Figure 1: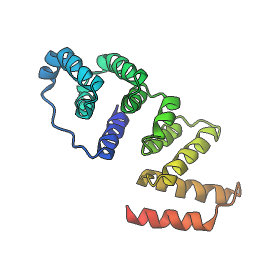
Figure 2: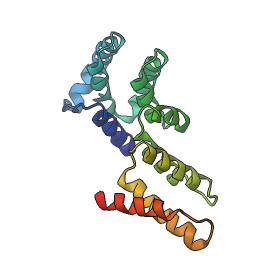
Figure 3: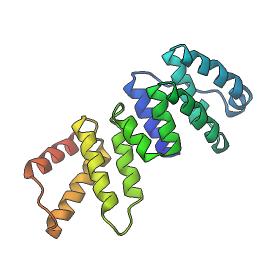
Figure 4: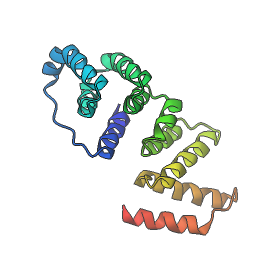
Length: 181
């Protein structure tokens, strides 16, 4: 859930909005259903702030409410809401849906890469996918420090092993980026 919170924070930052403080958990649970109904209706009417309000109660949710959140954002996604698609993909940890959502929200490529790394087994498939996601983030000028460090380490490893050569200009660019973080 920590990763989802980080990604949600990135999304909120991308929209230039500040997350407002939430009420206590007890208050949220008491008003949860009313709030969902209220903000969902506002979202249907095109109120962008309502998305942020919904994004808040979901961050504060208990695990047993995740299914409800996925259902709500799934419904909004089917109605054409790109932001809802983004939140639904994160809550479901659906890499395919996250890949589609990342086209609209490029910082999500970093999260996809991290998910690939966590799923790495004895094959290099997931590492290669992680590299591809980090490179997509870089193409969109959204590569984070973790991605820079991963790529530098990975490229050093494959070069030393003789598995492939990496363009020295790429290494130099990544080193410069690393110094900027």
